[in-house]
Image (tube, rainbow over all chains, first blue to last red):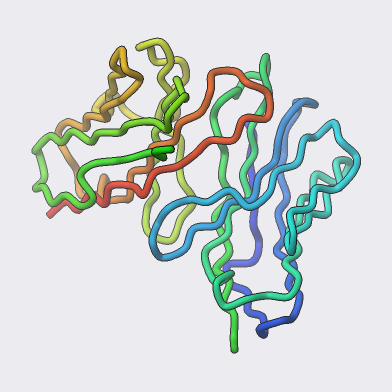
Length: 118
Length: 114
């Protein structure tokens, strides 16, 4: 079974600074996607960034980037130039691609609460 | 472009009752997944529907059941409610087996059991 672990229950950062959230996962499959979702107090789960396991290049989306280490099964999220609006719960998630045994199902980590100080 | 909509927003029930939660997928999506999120925890997969059939199921008892309608909307039913069923229930929609397609989430239904 796939598992996703976020070892940092809480993180904090000063506005305009950079913060990195950690995530490790375990799977025996080779074809999968990894995601970072953001959940503000409004509750809606918002996709931040995604990474396909077959792509060696790390994904970037504006101020958000990932450090994907496939051999180490590590998938960290870096937020640059942090803004007050980045404050939220962040979840790392795993999903197998077509043909995988867990296709369609997202497996989430426990989440990291990010606080941004002005 | 309408996103995923869920109703109701908040629901209060007592132990032993049953409840039905509803979800309309994002326009163009045909697959609906349901998740249970306990307070302070990550969402847990309940099940997924496509073509009106349950395609995958997580580790949830038979008290949790679902349905998908021809218009792709879906319902989650929970019978014999327990205190432990108190949680945020999230619905997510996507396109069936489309590589890289992310799931889009609704705002959730907060279910409180007294």
